[in-house]
Image (cartoon, rainbow over the protein chains, first blue to last red):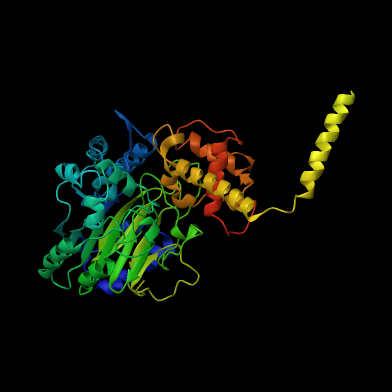
Length: 357
Length: 133
């Protein structure tokens, strides 16, 4: 084939093709894309491995991670690497992290880890670090700059002075709706590092940020929240193409704020309700999000899953593997400049992206 | 026999005198009732967020923060997985047996009452829609 496709034309063609035939993006991309520009990675998150006692762990959460690992290993062609999005453990203990790491060790290929609050607040990430390395870091892959942030830090007083024991601190942060919790943040030190890290990167280089918390403000009561989200967003604003992929929320969310596309990951352990289902609270779920389905709560893996993410010309398509529920793909749409579900569109889906909460 | 009728009369008299005061509850009464209710809701929140009822450490609040996605306003309703119209307490027991791997509670167990009180309190203000899916 000697035909050279221009990018704009390519995207238009693939979008139409995907819409018309419901082919997975990955197949379409294999047929038309320039391989050098495109790649995929798997994204597994929120496994919450929970120890009962000794070598006994909650079976349900174990099964979730085992299934995601097994399925990710079956991907062909192989993804370039795997991201684990945080909350490997439930109470941050050594047995939980060890058991989780053992299950993850069956993954073929390189795994990059993101810190979750359930991994952190027992020993402030010390043992996690021994297993998985730095709390925050960056790397480059095929022309894309990846940044991994530890976004689940909070105020020093809460972390260091408020609780009599480390176990108590972990337990207080583990309850999602616990009023004794504290809002997540990236923090000044890490923002300074991020600024420096990004200073050497061309503005045209696609940026993918991996964080555990949303890096946007959705609902503070359940910590679907990052306290210094605006400051982090400001550091990302000068770049042409920015994608933030986050875990923590155990549900499908996507949003566009300025140049930044946000897409969440499913949990392998259990799903969470959307904050608006809590009748007593105000929340700010991004208007772009078409809710995930809850087909059958009696099915143990209902509304859980994992993701295969295609990066093409620096933008992300997130393919959700949802087990018994229909798979979904949320992909950046060039025409509207925001992530869109390829199948499910709100009837009033043509609203402008939100720019501020 | 005479003795029994005296007792009955006495009961009727006491009953009648109570009836005379039936509409006259005081602020004190209201405070006591509301305190009783709040106490049970609080007990329900505790059961919801601690592993007291659980055999594997999993708690209700892990999947249902603030008891969200429990839909108390839609029960009783047809539950396809049970093949019948079910009440909310039966669904609570489903969760106790499965994710919590624990023993179910009797429908009138005070702990079940507490759980249902907490679930319903978090959903206050939402209109009743029994049977809704």
